[in-house]
Length: 163
Image 1 (cartoon, rainbow, N blue to C red):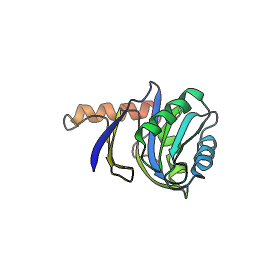
Image 2 (image 1 turned 60 degrees about the horizontal axis):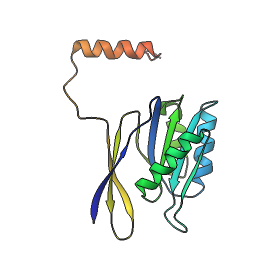
Image 3 (image 1 turned 45 degrees about the vertical axis):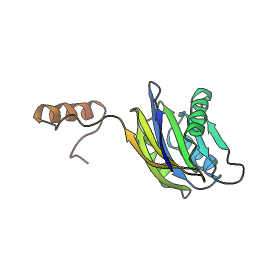
């Protein structure tokens, strides 16, 4: 068995969601979940079949993101893995809709950070061992960091401790 890494550089103003699903129907289900969650959402989505013709299936509302998704999914190569590139929306806007689909097994990450997908490759195929999302922690938050975090969340419309 061999351990490999595939880097996912997230395009500017985009987020990426990486997960695992289990059925070719995922293409339509995930597409519908995304377009139903955010009107006018821009995304590209690709999914690797794990049986039959073992193709990288793809859909989306943005041709450039669709191209990036299918190329990166094919490079990852692991069966039943999917990747979504979002633009003009955030994972928080769509994650519950995706996670609640019966075809979705798990979400590995949802981020705007650079990601490394750690893969195991055997004679049979490839599987995701895990992901490295962003960078290593550099320190522990202090009072001024807490204040900056809270101010940022208020600025984007989130209020800690209020209903």
